[in-house]
Image 1 (cartoon, rainbow, N blue to C red):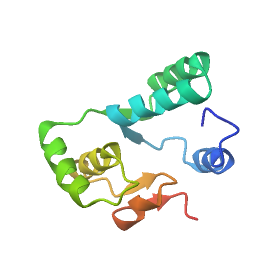
Image 2: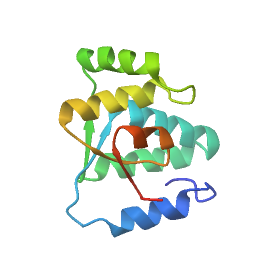
Image 3: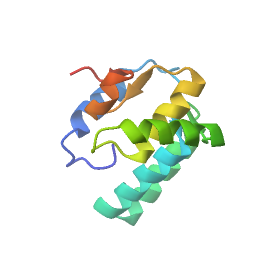
Length: 121
């Protein structure tokens, strides 16, 4: 979202704009950290701080921390995950499983095996 030169930027903006105004979005602290680090590296410090403030100020976004049992579940997933799946990906799936979340906003095809992925391709 923070990089308008990203290949998926237009699709991401379109999808998020299509959500109901009262839609609740859940992410993990690990995903937030990864996102802000990538924005800082690719776009710059100022944009990453702006993205951080926007996310933390948005009352529709819930930031969930992982628990020790999520780490164990993620380790099991990671052992069998394809090469391109990161440990953060596996940890995210573990947190979602614990919370009963079955839908994910991502462009990573690995998640299609486990969850309903949005936006639909």
